Length: 243
Image (cartoon, rainbow, N blue to C red; front, top):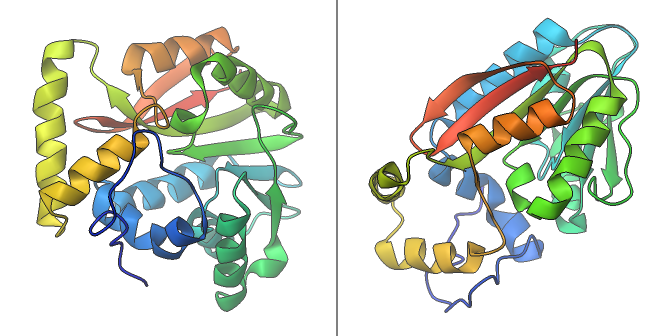
């Protein structure tokens, strides 16, 4: 696994973060060192998927990046007629995912698609749809369309698993939580300069919602049963069921 040093030596500009080849090459290390309880979130996603997946249905990982979630699902789900579909806008990420799935011996169980869910992609006959740290990269003006398409493509009783970086409902907590988050990253051997440069590069690229804004978006899109299954300061995992 290549170590993430993207922001150690190169100056950044506001909003310059891209999911290109350089990012894809270090993305697995970036996630492990930047997302609190990343391995546990992955385990929980598999656990929740196993509860809701149904025979002869599709399972989508939208924003599948390097294919870690797809690989974990393929190794742990044995329902009949399941198609695991990874969707990503970045060809660099999909190339990385393809190699990972091939090395893991599960590429025959997975389909990878280059598409933008907020523009030209429809979810079909799904029992589970996953967006793990993905919706936050879709422009706010396009999020309702993206989530509505997910709701439309889900079977009754199917679930939407959403993991996001969030803002606090009460703004006075945000500064405190961000400091705790930066401390977490420093414990994982990022230096303050890297943290500052990456934050600048992500400005207006990653746009988090408040927790309540995410809940309202899910409900507006048609979901009636919504709850959280994970919370760590400014990170949250939510699950929504199509009744």
